Image (cartoon, rainbow over all chains, first blue to last red):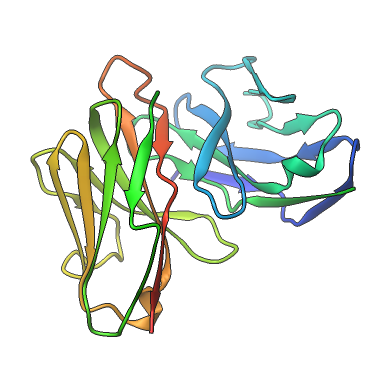
Length: 111
Length: 118
């Protein structure tokens, strides 16, 4: 079945550090890939998405590239801020059912 | 656009009572709504998929008689936790997809409902 694997957290970084959160997936066909962010006390928000191989999704300084050859969709940001502290979920959608989520990675950015 | 609301945001109830959670798409019509449950420090687990006017499809292991889902219109779905017990305490999240032809692979999430059963 479809699955998403994310790096375990928490990830603790200092402000302005470079961020990478790894995400790999297993799916039949050609899924769409997503990153969602959940701020403390809030629901999930779509951060970015990519719908086909080599697409790059980007938003708020975050970006991720759909790599079909490595079945990956790693999230990156060049310079994190304290306000980026949240839980980040990688997800995929194949059209057969609802989104399949990874287990989430908590990011803590320290001043 | 594409706002999904949930009510209530937080509820505390006694064991044995039933609790109803509403999920509304405020500015679009949702073909399908999904109900998820999120355990602490865990990912979202899909509970059921509901389409307007038809019975919900439950995921394996989810008790349909305990978690009643009603999707009466294209903008409203409800989840009723019947005879709630402490182990039902969790964060319940709904999401909705737009009508076919408009980004059907993007779901919009509600802010969630924190249920605490004493």
